[in-house]
Image (cartoon, rainbow, N blue to C red; front, side, top):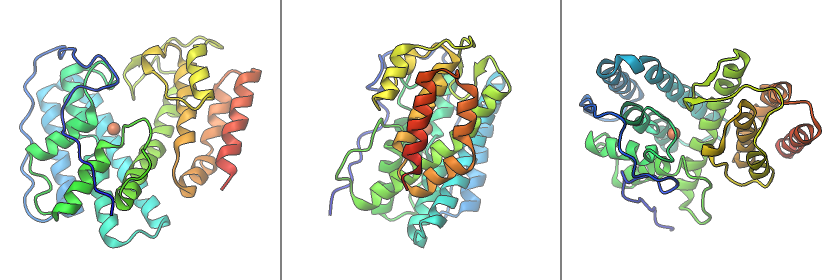
Length: 292
Ligand SMILES: [Fe+2]
């Protein structure tokens, strides 16, 4: 069986400069203790206490922390729906709950210290999540092997692509988390644009809302199915284009069907400029999602 690779946590993000110092020196709140065997109820309570401690520590960033709490709970909901559709067994369903609930723990510390959600130039938030789990001894009740699976799946959730040849259980968990994360992010992003907000809250990026304006390099990266360098994103249309690119990296038919059935692509099509390159890109995306 393929080994589960569990890289060391908490090092600067390899995609970015990673050496930048936190903008402010704020004390990381001490996470509450999670004791006893894992249950969704106690872990949810632990998670709420964890988020509350950050909100108390930095009340100015209360709304950012709250957004991340909502996001996590949405990912949990999506992963459960996806797991049910895939008829996951009890053990993997439980591990899926754990990875959903803990995958973005590092976001809170990233927001506290760097006031950004961009890993490039701050910190790899997935590694930070695993570091927090270790610090809090969150998985002591799990068998060793399951513990390694949880950590590895979380470490892989923000990687550009999954590599081939992963341990089969790790591959399932990592794919589940990546799809659930995207399913949770699509409506957040689209709602943001529907409300004509001048900030893209999910990434905390100031964006220029100029009709028809976009960055050709961002378009080209998505059209070539390459990763978008978010530091290049300048216009509101850029972030929409980048998010359309997420559809090329969906792992399960259920996810692809949900993206279509929930009308997310229709909403992208309405928000993007009605010019030929965009119309064509929407067609390509729709075709890709329909090939189930
Ligand atoms: Fe994340």
